Image (cartoon, rainbow, N blue to C red; front, side, top):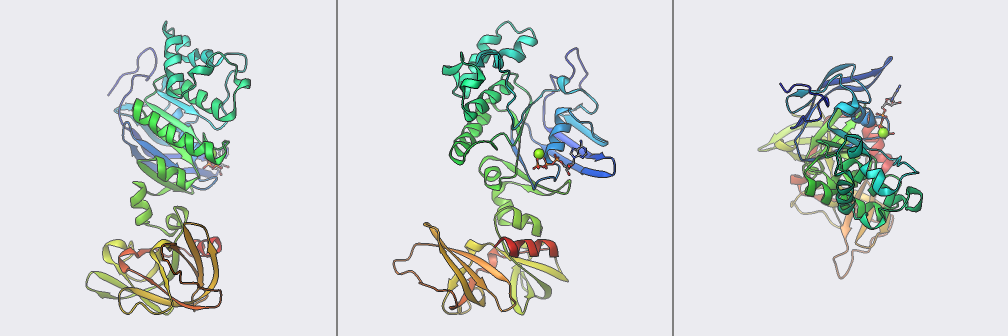
Length: 380
Ligand SMILES: Nc1ncnc2c1ncn2[C@@H]1O[C@H](COP(=O)(O)OP(=O)(O)OP(=O)(O)O)[C@@H](O)[C@H]1O
Ligand SMILES: [Mg+2]
Protein backbone atom coordinates (compact mmCIF):
# COMPACT_ATOMS: atom_id res chain seq x y z
CA UNK A 1 0.00 0.00 0.00
CA UNK A 2 1.44 3.37 -1.06
CA UNK A 3 1.82 5.93 1.71
CA UNK A 4 0.58 9.45 1.88
CA UNK A 5 3.40 11.98 1.58
CA UNK A 6 3.61 15.73 2.01
CA UNK A 7 1.75 16.40 -1.25
CA UNK A 8 -1.00 13.91 -0.41
CA UNK A 9 -1.41 11.13 -2.94
CA UNK A 10 -0.13 12.99 -5.98
CA UNK A 11 2.42 10.28 -6.76
CA UNK A 12 -0.16 7.51 -6.95
CA UNK A 13 0.10 5.58 -10.20
CA UNK A 14 -1.76 2.77 -11.89
CA UNK A 15 -5.24 1.74 -12.94
CA UNK A 16 -8.17 3.71 -11.57
CA UNK A 17 -10.52 1.49 -9.62
CA UNK A 18 -13.98 2.18 -8.24
CA UNK A 19 -15.14 -0.47 -5.80
CA UNK A 20 -18.85 -0.62 -4.96
CA UNK A 21 -19.12 3.15 -5.02
CA UNK A 22 -22.50 4.59 -4.03
CA UNK A 23 -23.47 8.25 -3.75
CA UNK A 24 -26.77 9.24 -2.18
CA UNK A 25 -28.19 12.73 -1.82
CA UNK A 26 -30.74 12.36 1.01
CA UNK A 27 -33.19 9.70 -0.28
CA UNK A 28 -31.93 9.79 -3.85
CA UNK A 29 -29.21 7.42 -5.09
CA UNK A 30 -27.29 9.16 -7.87
CA UNK A 31 -24.59 6.48 -8.23
CA UNK A 32 -25.53 2.97 -7.27
CA UNK A 33 -22.91 0.37 -6.25
CA UNK A 34 -20.60 1.17 -9.14
CA UNK A 35 -17.52 -0.99 -9.69
CA UNK A 36 -15.13 -0.48 -12.57
CA UNK A 37 -11.49 -0.51 -13.56
CA UNK A 38 -10.03 2.03 -15.97
CA UNK A 39 -6.65 0.73 -17.16
CA UNK A 40 -3.77 3.18 -16.86
CA UNK A 41 -3.21 5.17 -20.07
CA UNK A 42 -6.55 4.28 -21.64
CA UNK A 43 -9.31 6.50 -23.00
CA UNK A 44 -12.51 5.70 -21.17
CA UNK A 45 -15.86 7.23 -22.12
CA UNK A 46 -18.80 7.44 -19.76
CA UNK A 47 -21.98 7.72 -21.77
CA UNK A 48 -25.56 8.06 -20.63
CA UNK A 49 -28.69 10.20 -20.54
CA UNK A 50 -29.01 13.38 -18.52
CA UNK A 51 -29.18 12.74 -14.79
CA UNK A 52 -27.79 9.18 -14.90
CA UNK A 53 -24.88 10.03 -12.57
CA UNK A 54 -21.95 10.80 -14.88
CA UNK A 55 -20.86 14.10 -13.32
CA UNK A 56 -21.39 12.73 -9.82
CA UNK A 57 -19.06 9.83 -10.66
CA UNK A 58 -16.39 12.22 -11.98
CA UNK A 59 -16.73 14.48 -8.97
CA UNK A 60 -16.03 11.53 -6.69
CA UNK A 61 -12.95 10.59 -8.71
CA UNK A 62 -11.80 14.23 -8.50
CA UNK A 63 -12.42 14.38 -4.75
CA UNK A 64 -15.02 17.16 -5.07
CA UNK A 65 -17.61 14.79 -3.63
CA UNK A 66 -17.11 11.85 -1.24
CA UNK A 67 -18.87 8.51 -1.82
CA UNK A 68 -21.54 7.50 0.66
CA UNK A 69 -19.96 4.05 0.58
CA UNK A 70 -17.31 2.20 -1.44
CA UNK A 71 -13.67 2.89 -2.30
CA UNK A 72 -11.68 4.70 -4.98
CA UNK A 73 -8.11 3.68 -5.77
CA UNK A 74 -5.32 4.56 -8.17
CA UNK A 75 -3.00 1.57 -8.32
CA UNK A 76 -2.78 0.38 -4.70
CA UNK A 77 -3.38 3.83 -3.22
CA UNK A 78 -6.77 4.26 -1.59
CA UNK A 79 -7.91 7.83 -2.32
CA UNK A 80 -11.24 7.58 -0.52
CA UNK A 81 -11.68 10.50 1.85
CA UNK A 82 -8.75 12.52 0.49
CA UNK A 83 -9.15 16.09 -0.78
CA UNK A 84 -9.16 17.00 -4.42
CA UNK A 85 -5.81 18.84 -4.28
CA UNK A 86 -4.18 15.72 -2.82
CA UNK A 87 -5.11 13.59 -5.80
CA UNK A 88 -3.21 13.15 -9.08
CA UNK A 89 -6.41 14.06 -10.90
CA UNK A 90 -7.38 17.13 -12.93
CA UNK A 91 -10.73 18.05 -14.40
CA UNK A 92 -11.75 20.01 -17.48
CA UNK A 93 -15.33 21.16 -17.17
CA UNK A 94 -17.71 22.37 -19.82
CA UNK A 95 -17.26 25.94 -18.62
CA UNK A 96 -13.59 26.71 -18.94
CA UNK A 97 -13.18 29.09 -15.99
CA UNK A 98 -9.87 30.61 -17.10
CA UNK A 99 -8.53 33.50 -15.01
CA UNK A 100 -9.63 36.54 -17.05
CA UNK A 101 -6.87 38.90 -15.86
CA UNK A 102 -3.99 36.50 -16.63
CA UNK A 103 -2.44 35.86 -20.03
CA UNK A 104 -2.88 32.45 -21.60
CA UNK A 105 0.68 31.48 -20.64
CA UNK A 106 0.15 32.56 -17.02
CA UNK A 107 -3.15 30.71 -16.88
CA UNK A 108 -1.38 27.51 -17.88
CA UNK A 109 1.67 28.16 -15.69
CA UNK A 110 -0.53 28.76 -12.66
CA UNK A 111 -0.52 25.15 -11.34
CA UNK A 112 3.23 24.49 -11.69
CA UNK A 113 4.02 27.94 -10.20
CA UNK A 114 1.86 27.26 -7.19
CA UNK A 115 3.75 24.04 -6.62
CA UNK A 116 7.00 26.06 -6.74
CA UNK A 117 8.30 24.62 -10.02
CA UNK A 118 10.96 26.98 -11.36
CA UNK A 119 10.40 25.90 -14.98
CA UNK A 120 6.67 26.74 -14.84
CA UNK A 121 6.78 29.05 -17.88
CA UNK A 122 8.61 26.48 -20.03
CA UNK A 123 6.17 23.75 -18.96
CA UNK A 124 3.28 26.04 -19.88
CA UNK A 125 4.77 26.67 -23.33
CA UNK A 126 5.17 22.92 -23.91
CA UNK A 127 1.55 22.29 -22.91
CA UNK A 128 0.37 25.14 -25.17
CA UNK A 129 2.33 23.65 -28.08
CA UNK A 130 0.58 20.35 -27.52
CA UNK A 131 -2.83 21.99 -27.98
CA UNK A 132 -1.45 24.22 -30.78
CA UNK A 133 -2.07 27.45 -28.88
CA UNK A 134 1.52 28.56 -28.28
CA UNK A 135 1.21 31.36 -30.83
CA UNK A 136 -1.48 33.06 -28.71
CA UNK A 137 0.28 32.65 -25.33
CA UNK A 138 0.44 36.41 -24.73
CA UNK A 139 -3.29 37.05 -25.13
CA UNK A 140 -5.98 37.25 -22.45
CA UNK A 141 -8.85 34.70 -22.39
CA UNK A 142 -11.41 37.26 -23.60
CA UNK A 143 -9.42 37.58 -26.84
CA UNK A 144 -9.91 33.90 -27.72
CA UNK A 145 -12.75 31.99 -29.32
CA UNK A 146 -14.66 29.32 -27.40
CA UNK A 147 -12.72 26.50 -29.01
CA UNK A 148 -9.41 28.22 -28.31
CA UNK A 149 -10.35 28.74 -24.66
CA UNK A 150 -11.24 25.08 -24.54
CA UNK A 151 -7.74 24.15 -25.68
CA UNK A 152 -6.19 26.41 -23.08
CA UNK A 153 -8.32 24.78 -20.38
CA UNK A 154 -7.01 21.45 -21.59
CA UNK A 155 -3.39 22.68 -21.54
CA UNK A 156 -3.91 23.99 -18.02
CA UNK A 157 -4.98 20.53 -16.88
CA UNK A 158 -2.32 18.60 -18.83
CA UNK A 159 0.56 20.77 -17.60
CA UNK A 160 0.06 19.24 -14.14
CA UNK A 161 0.71 15.77 -15.63
CA UNK A 162 -2.15 14.25 -13.67
CA UNK A 163 -2.37 10.49 -13.51
CA UNK A 164 -6.03 10.79 -14.46
CA UNK A 165 -7.62 13.56 -16.52
CA UNK A 166 -11.38 13.99 -16.22
CA UNK A 167 -13.27 15.66 -19.04
CA UNK A 168 -16.88 16.55 -18.30
CA UNK A 169 -18.63 17.39 -21.58
CA UNK A 170 -15.69 19.58 -22.52
CA UNK A 171 -16.80 19.94 -26.12
CA UNK A 172 -20.45 20.68 -25.40
CA UNK A 173 -20.21 24.38 -26.22
CA UNK A 174 -18.53 23.92 -29.60
CA UNK A 175 -20.14 23.79 -33.02
CA UNK A 176 -20.17 20.46 -34.81
CA UNK A 177 -17.14 21.07 -37.01
CA UNK A 178 -14.94 22.36 -34.20
CA UNK A 179 -16.20 19.54 -32.02
CA UNK A 180 -15.06 16.94 -34.56
CA UNK A 181 -11.65 18.67 -34.83
CA UNK A 182 -11.26 18.74 -31.07
CA UNK A 183 -12.19 15.07 -30.82
CA UNK A 184 -9.32 14.16 -33.13
CA UNK A 185 -7.04 16.51 -31.23
CA UNK A 186 -7.97 15.16 -27.82
CA UNK A 187 -7.34 11.62 -28.96
CA UNK A 188 -3.95 12.65 -30.38
CA UNK A 189 -2.98 14.41 -27.16
CA UNK A 190 -4.06 11.45 -25.07
CA UNK A 191 -1.98 9.06 -27.19
CA UNK A 192 0.98 11.44 -27.08
CA UNK A 193 1.06 12.04 -23.33
CA UNK A 194 -0.30 8.62 -22.32
CA UNK A 195 -2.57 9.84 -19.49
CA UNK A 196 -5.70 8.04 -18.38
CA UNK A 197 -8.64 10.03 -19.79
CA UNK A 198 -12.19 9.73 -18.54
CA UNK A 199 -14.47 11.53 -20.90
CA UNK A 200 -18.10 12.17 -20.04
CA UNK A 201 -20.50 12.82 -22.86
CA UNK A 202 -24.04 12.13 -23.93
CA UNK A 203 -23.00 12.09 -27.56
CA UNK A 204 -22.72 8.41 -28.43
CA UNK A 205 -20.86 9.06 -31.66
CA UNK A 206 -18.26 11.08 -29.79
CA UNK A 207 -17.80 8.28 -27.25
CA UNK A 208 -17.49 5.64 -29.95
CA UNK A 209 -14.96 7.49 -32.09
CA UNK A 210 -12.64 8.41 -29.23
CA UNK A 211 -12.69 5.77 -26.55
CA UNK A 212 -10.90 2.46 -26.03
CA UNK A 213 -13.70 1.53 -23.67
CA UNK A 214 -17.23 2.89 -23.48
CA UNK A 215 -19.41 2.46 -20.40
CA UNK A 216 -23.14 3.13 -20.75
CA UNK A 217 -24.70 4.40 -17.53
CA UNK A 218 -28.37 4.43 -16.64
CA UNK A 219 -29.96 5.30 -13.28
CA UNK A 220 -26.63 5.36 -11.47
CA UNK A 221 -25.47 1.95 -12.75
CA UNK A 222 -23.34 0.77 -15.64
CA UNK A 223 -25.54 -1.24 -17.98
CA UNK A 224 -22.72 -2.40 -20.21
CA UNK A 225 -19.13 -1.58 -20.93
CA UNK A 226 -16.58 -2.66 -23.52
CA UNK A 227 -14.81 -1.62 -26.71
CA UNK A 228 -17.12 0.55 -28.88
CA UNK A 229 -17.40 -1.88 -31.80
CA UNK A 230 -18.27 -4.73 -29.48
CA UNK A 231 -20.96 -2.72 -27.68
CA UNK A 232 -22.49 -1.71 -30.97
CA UNK A 233 -22.41 -5.22 -32.39
CA UNK A 234 -23.79 -6.95 -29.35
CA UNK A 235 -25.77 -4.83 -26.90
CA UNK A 236 -26.74 -6.70 -23.76
CA UNK A 237 -29.84 -4.67 -22.84
CA UNK A 238 -32.61 -2.94 -24.77
CA UNK A 239 -31.48 0.37 -23.27
CA UNK A 240 -27.97 0.01 -24.69
CA UNK A 241 -29.35 -1.22 -28.02
CA UNK A 242 -31.26 2.06 -28.24
CA UNK A 243 -28.78 4.42 -26.71
CA UNK A 244 -25.73 3.34 -28.71
CA UNK A 245 -27.00 3.67 -32.27
CA UNK A 246 -30.48 2.64 -33.33
CA UNK A 247 -32.03 -0.82 -33.17
CA UNK A 248 -35.10 -2.53 -34.54
CA UNK A 249 -36.58 -4.33 -31.56
CA UNK A 250 -39.51 -6.70 -31.08
CA UNK A 251 -40.63 -8.67 -28.06
CA UNK A 252 -41.87 -12.27 -27.92
CA UNK A 253 -40.90 -15.68 -26.55
CA UNK A 254 -38.23 -18.29 -27.11
CA UNK A 255 -40.07 -21.30 -28.60
CA UNK A 256 -37.38 -23.71 -29.77
CA UNK A 257 -33.73 -24.44 -30.49
CA UNK A 258 -32.25 -25.14 -33.85
CA UNK A 259 -28.65 -26.31 -33.52
CA UNK A 260 -26.63 -23.27 -32.47
CA UNK A 261 -29.63 -20.91 -32.63
CA UNK A 262 -32.57 -19.98 -30.46
CA UNK A 263 -35.86 -19.79 -32.29
CA UNK A 264 -38.15 -17.02 -31.03
CA UNK A 265 -41.63 -16.08 -32.02
CA UNK A 266 -41.80 -12.30 -32.26
CA UNK A 267 -45.22 -10.82 -32.96
CA UNK A 268 -46.19 -13.69 -35.24
CA UNK A 269 -42.84 -14.11 -37.02
CA UNK A 270 -40.32 -16.85 -36.26
CA UNK A 271 -36.73 -15.59 -36.06
CA UNK A 272 -33.38 -17.17 -35.23
CA UNK A 273 -30.76 -15.79 -32.84
CA UNK A 274 -27.30 -17.35 -32.41
CA UNK A 275 -27.06 -18.77 -28.87
CA UNK A 276 -23.92 -16.77 -28.15
CA UNK A 277 -25.66 -13.55 -29.21
CA UNK A 278 -28.54 -13.83 -26.78
CA UNK A 279 -28.55 -12.60 -23.18
CA UNK A 280 -31.71 -14.69 -22.65
CA UNK A 281 -31.94 -18.50 -22.98
CA UNK A 282 -35.68 -19.06 -22.65
CA UNK A 283 -39.00 -17.43 -21.84
CA UNK A 284 -39.65 -13.80 -22.77
CA UNK A 285 -37.13 -12.17 -25.06
CA UNK A 286 -36.59 -8.97 -27.03
CA UNK A 287 -35.17 -9.59 -30.46
CA UNK A 288 -33.04 -6.94 -32.13
CA UNK A 289 -31.27 -6.20 -35.40
CA UNK A 290 -29.52 -2.99 -36.49
CA UNK A 291 -31.12 -0.96 -39.30
CA UNK A 292 -28.10 -1.22 -41.61
CA UNK A 293 -28.13 -5.02 -41.29
CA UNK A 294 -31.64 -5.22 -42.76
CA UNK A 295 -32.24 -5.34 -46.51
CA UNK A 296 -35.45 -4.15 -48.07
CA UNK A 297 -36.66 -6.18 -51.04
CA UNK A 298 -39.72 -6.60 -53.21
CA UNK A 299 -39.73 -10.40 -52.72
CA UNK A 300 -38.96 -12.81 -49.86
CA UNK A 301 -35.31 -13.74 -49.46
CA UNK A 302 -35.86 -17.41 -50.49
CA UNK A 303 -34.38 -19.00 -47.43
CA UNK A 304 -31.13 -17.03 -47.36
CA UNK A 305 -31.93 -15.33 -44.07
CA UNK A 306 -34.85 -14.44 -41.86
CA UNK A 307 -37.45 -12.08 -43.19
CA UNK A 308 -40.72 -10.37 -42.45
CA UNK A 309 -43.28 -8.71 -44.66
CA UNK A 310 -44.18 -5.07 -44.24
CA UNK A 311 -45.43 -1.89 -45.86
CA UNK A 312 -43.27 1.12 -46.67
CA UNK A 313 -44.27 4.15 -44.59
CA UNK A 314 -41.54 6.57 -45.51
CA UNK A 315 -38.48 6.86 -47.74
CA UNK A 316 -35.77 9.43 -47.03
CA UNK A 317 -32.73 9.97 -49.16
CA UNK A 318 -29.76 11.02 -47.01
CA UNK A 319 -27.01 11.08 -49.64
CA UNK A 320 -24.83 8.08 -48.85
CA UNK A 321 -27.85 6.01 -47.84
CA UNK A 322 -31.59 5.80 -48.11
CA UNK A 323 -33.61 5.22 -44.97
CA UNK A 324 -36.85 3.25 -45.19
CA UNK A 325 -39.45 3.13 -42.45
CA UNK A 326 -41.45 -0.05 -42.78
CA UNK A 327 -44.54 -1.00 -40.82
CA UNK A 328 -44.80 -4.68 -39.88
CA UNK A 329 -48.17 -6.49 -39.57
CA UNK A 330 -47.90 -6.18 -35.75
CA UNK A 331 -47.89 -2.38 -36.13
CA UNK A 332 -44.21 -2.07 -35.15
CA UNK A 333 -42.20 0.26 -37.36
CA UNK A 334 -38.69 -0.83 -38.36
CA UNK A 335 -36.03 1.28 -39.93
CA UNK A 336 -33.47 0.11 -42.46
CA UNK A 337 -30.62 1.80 -44.27
CA UNK A 338 -29.50 0.89 -47.73
CA UNK A 339 -26.29 2.32 -49.10
CA UNK A 340 -26.91 3.95 -52.42
CA UNK A 341 -24.79 1.47 -54.37
CA UNK A 342 -27.12 0.27 -57.07
CA UNK A 343 -27.16 1.79 -60.51
CA UNK A 344 -30.88 1.13 -60.64
CA UNK A 345 -32.23 1.82 -57.17
CA UNK A 346 -35.19 -0.19 -55.91
CA UNK A 347 -37.43 2.92 -56.17
CA UNK A 348 -39.91 2.22 -53.39
CA UNK A 349 -42.82 4.46 -52.48
CA UNK A 350 -44.91 4.73 -49.33
CA UNK A 351 -47.62 2.07 -49.44
CA UNK A 352 -45.51 -0.50 -51.34
CA UNK A 353 -45.35 -4.03 -49.97
CA UNK A 354 -41.81 -5.17 -49.16
CA UNK A 355 -39.86 -7.89 -47.42
CA UNK A 356 -37.27 -7.05 -44.83
CA UNK A 357 -34.52 -9.61 -44.68
CA UNK A 358 -31.41 -10.09 -42.55
CA UNK A 359 -28.76 -12.62 -41.78
CA UNK A 360 -29.58 -14.21 -38.37
CA UNK A 361 -25.89 -13.86 -37.55
CA UNK A 362 -26.58 -10.13 -36.96
CA UNK A 363 -29.56 -10.70 -34.67
CA UNK A 364 -29.29 -10.32 -30.91
CA UNK A 365 -31.48 -11.17 -27.93
CA UNK A 366 -31.87 -9.06 -24.76
CA UNK A 367 -34.22 -9.19 -21.76
CA UNK A 368 -37.64 -7.63 -22.31
CA UNK A 369 -37.85 -4.00 -21.22
CA UNK A 370 -41.21 -2.56 -22.22
CA UNK A 371 -40.26 1.05 -21.57
CA UNK A 372 -37.27 0.72 -23.88
CA UNK A 373 -39.21 -1.00 -26.63
CA UNK A 374 -41.65 1.93 -26.62
CA UNK A 375 -38.84 4.48 -26.60
CA UNK A 376 -37.21 2.73 -29.57
CA UNK A 377 -40.43 2.81 -31.57
CA UNK A 378 -40.89 6.52 -30.79
CA UNK A 379 -37.30 7.35 -31.73
CA UNK A 380 -37.78 5.89 -35.20
N1 LIG B 1 -25.79 18.00 -4.81
C1 LIG B 1 -26.85 17.30 -5.20
N2 LIG B 1 -27.94 17.19 -4.43
C2 LIG B 1 -29.01 16.46 -4.80
N3 LIG B 1 -29.10 15.78 -5.97
C3 LIG B 1 -28.04 15.85 -6.79
C4 LIG B 1 -26.86 16.61 -6.46
N4 LIG B 1 -25.98 16.48 -7.48
C5 LIG B 1 -26.58 15.69 -8.39
N5 LIG B 1 -27.82 15.31 -7.99
C6 LIG B 1 -28.75 14.44 -8.72
O1 LIG B 1 -28.09 13.24 -9.05
C7 LIG B 1 -28.45 12.82 -10.35
C8 LIG B 1 -27.21 12.63 -11.18
O2 LIG B 1 -26.65 13.90 -11.46
P1 LIG B 1 -25.39 14.08 -12.39
O3 LIG B 1 -25.01 15.51 -12.35
O4 LIG B 1 -24.35 13.10 -11.98
O5 LIG B 1 -26.00 13.69 -13.80
P2 LIG B 1 -25.30 13.63 -15.25
O6 LIG B 1 -25.31 12.20 -15.67
O7 LIG B 1 -23.98 14.30 -15.18
O8 LIG B 1 -26.33 14.43 -16.14
P3 LIG B 1 -26.09 15.53 -17.31
O9 LIG B 1 -25.86 14.75 -18.56
O10 LIG B 1 -27.39 16.26 -17.34
O11 LIG B 1 -24.93 16.39 -16.92
C9 LIG B 1 -29.42 13.84 -10.91
O12 LIG B 1 -30.73 13.36 -10.74
C10 LIG B 1 -29.18 15.06 -10.04
O13 LIG B 1 -30.34 15.83 -9.90
MG1 LIG C 1 -23.25 16.11 -16.00
